[in-house]
Length: 123
Image (cartoon, rainbow, N blue to C red; front, top):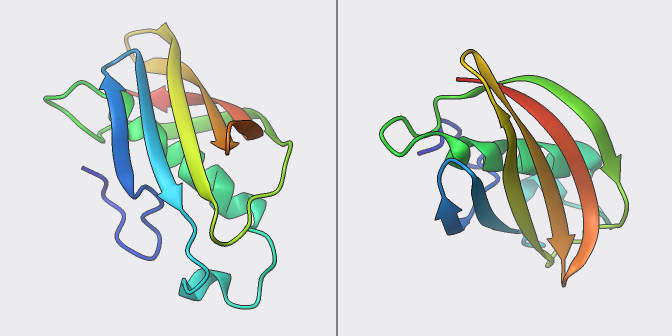
């Protein structure tokens, strides 16, 4: 489904899919991942990548993962993600157009929002 391979594939599991309107994925940041060696918190760039990768599941089922990120807006980190945390990411389609679609993506740890962004995706 995703073109990325470990260690850059940031989605461990698809939890729910209501294509193309909404999807939920899970990423568990294991303390023994090479990218996280010696870190207390997960860098925002990796959390952002996880949120962006979740949008691949908004693509139609016959064309999974085909969308390309065109732009990220209003990216914010509102909490800390630590090694061992399970990041639950919900991507929701806001607008659907011919050349692109816009989505809101929210990341939560234990039910608390830790990150949010708006993203424009090519179809």
